[in-house]
Length: 177
Image (cartoon, rainbow, N blue to C red; front, top):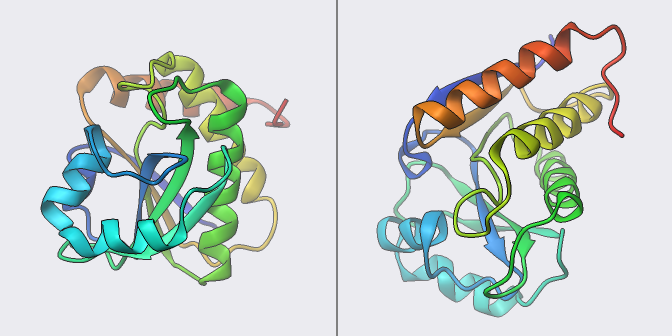
């Protein structure tokens, strides 16, 4: 059965899934943006687990429990150094490594936000293209994932991801550049 990819507007911290993705800094400090919301809603246990694991290399991803969140786990994808900006490479590698970690845990559902587009300053349309290409490339191999959700904060992000997916999936051979 092929993996279903869906797009929705919402708050990723409210998503029921095996795992949600946190666009993290390499120190795994849950301080602002989605990471701050994960800490507020999920509780201090998540930060404690991050402190035992971190820091991690840029582009790497690690898994913690999700505390009081609706999801069971959080995949912390390091898209920025502390107080830094996201790059195309950091988003590509973080997306790729997130998918590898979820396969290692045999997760069936995963929810991504738009990585690196908030305080990390990466352009939304470029982020959508990078992430969707990585997901589609990953899904060319056998996957435990049954559904990948892109949970996007506002209408602009939702439209960017939906339009990018339509363009890329309509191409005869969607490839990661």
